[in-house]
Image (cartoon, rainbow, N blue to C red):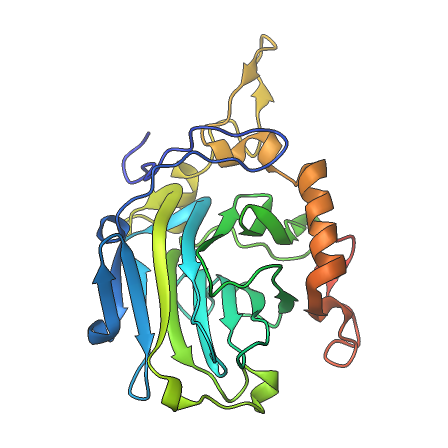
Length: 306
């Protein structure tokens, strides 16, 4: 592997039927560091907790940036009345024309389900929200949340079930995030102006502090150097075999350099596609692609979506 590009974690097993990973989880401080409100970051053995009270929320970020790969964290969300709070897990590059992939967990009143909002920013433009309910109570135990990113697709996964896919449609004139290294971040903050029932339900500070708990930190991606250009990083983090395996002059198959560039990872397989359809049929609450009020003309990326 060339300089400036290292595998941080190693994916030991990929099966064709589902995303199956055997990755050794790293300790928090091997991959991440607190980014703000250090006094609201609590270490408890292998767990990390972020606290939100009336004075502040808190957040952490990865020590490095990555171009393609997969990141996973296990989160147990705020218990009880979490209305007005948002816990986020996301990837983002820097600058006004940044790219970003968001998980945002929207708190609710006691007994009401959490909603998960996903969003994608490309070249600084977002407005690609989807909202879904979850098929479990995310505040009772830890569940894994993952973002898979390669040259073909961005996939949001909950316990390895895909809940959203954004496919590369550059051939149709749709921009796709592929040339900006991204950090991995998480935070908790007060968003009672919009997060719960459109801002109608406000944060009840008598329940503070609100606490989100984390463990199982994993990043399996190509680490990029801040000292090299975007083109240089892209070359280092792109398979020598191209976007997929190819044939050599003698007809032999050339294996992709990174597991996420293997042809099997270019799209969902049949099982994953059925899982995605199930999520949409049973848990989809909002989809910007069907919001004719906001988008009288359907966004181009919404056509022929998987």
